[in-house]
Structures are given as structure tokens and as C-alpha cells.
Image (tube, rainbow, N blue to C red; front, top):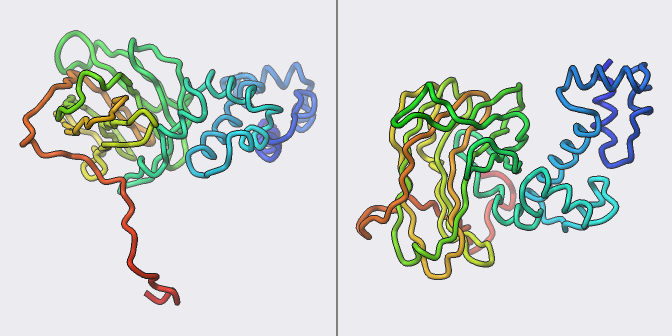
Length: 292
């Protein structure tokens, strides 16, 4: 019943869809369908369609060079202004900033690929909840599982999800005070039944929102159930830096706790963990016959 109507929604996300038409697909009156849908899916039909369209838009922003105006029309919006307002309401930033900050190529892990979108709703002061489907994750304060002090922060999956989905709780701040310094982000992390991966990440951008330094622990991701342990990222903040972003990522089902973060200057002799975002250019074409 609901499954049929969800299929209709998925196949016609680009088109105007009214409650009566969707309810008819399920063989129910609009009033009855609305009540059943909200009980089964956890949100109204309107909210579900909005989230699906925004999720599709975030994928296009991350993985294609399609213009924002074209994405607006592709996702059923009549103007770029209306699309930008809706996108910012759900993901916490304009689509252009989102595209720059969460370039899909930068969030590939060796264990599994990752996707990011954003949701501004948060229950933890100073932190933003992001993820491929933010409504599938929960962020909060836990006074029962603590590394030190009286509470820790946590991020957990709350609904079944597909491969590659993940969330991150993150912060951003100005880089001005740290320019010319080598900075170390340290935090304690504990995990429970993480099926994908968990990790810390940190990024330094310039005023044009280009990546200058970046590390997402791609070579040392945290898997499964692990006790509290300390993890670190070390990056330079070069001249021209404007914004520093950092957070913790959870991919797929599971739960991760974080506590006792520190952000401090270290000696220039401290090894960097920066992962290269440069692409190696070959000297000549290769494997033209696809036999290698």
C-alpha cells in the first residue's frame, strides 16, 4: 500500500505531485493516506518529498558539474531562489557553499565511499549535524558514556539505511588566529557496532573555499566496537587560510561517541597527516586497448 505510493513518488520526483494522486495510488482517501503515511514513514508526505528532492539535489551538487539553476529545475523548483531557500533550510547553507565544502572526492574512504549533505537542526551547542540523509542519524549529549567530565557527544544511526550513507557532526571557525601555525586536533573516540567506519576529519579552506589542507583518517578509519581511544590530525594553516572545519564521521549503522577534543599548536617538526588532494597528470595516454 505505502510501498506502491513511495514508488510513484520516487519515479516522479521531478514532477508536481498532489496528495490526492499519491493517495489514489495506494487506494486510500487523502485523509486516511496522510495518517497512515505519517505513522509508517515518520513524516508527512510533503516533508518526505521535500527531503527526497533535497537529497537528490545534494547528490547532484556533490558528484556533477551541473549548474545550480539546472539542478533547481531538475528537482522540481520553479526558480533558483526558491531552491536555495529550501536547500538552506534543510542543509544549513546555500547550495554553492555546500558544493565547495563537501566535494565528494574528498570524502572517499578506502573501506567504503561516502556521501554528504547537511541539516542545520542540532541539539548540541556549536555543532552541526550533516550526512547523506540527516534524518537517519541522531546527534546528542550522553551523560552515561563519558571519557572525562560529565558528558560526551554522540552520533548514531536511528533507521535502516543503504550502503554509503553517513553523517558527521562538525564545527567551522575562522582561521585568522592560526595562520602560519601547525595545528593538531585531538579527540577521544569510542564506537559500538560500526558497520562502515568512523573517523575524525579536519579541513582548511581559503577565501575562495578551495581546500588547502585536509585529512579524514582515510588510512586509519575506526571499525566495529572499540573502547575509548585518542586520535589525532595534524595540519598546517598556511597564508590565505580563511576557514577551519572539523568533526567526526559515522558511516552506516552504529554509534560513535566523542569527548575531550583539543585544538592546539604543535612544533613544526610534528609530522603532518594531510592527505594529498592533487591529481597526478600522466605524461602520455595509457591502456588505450583496455588490456592492462
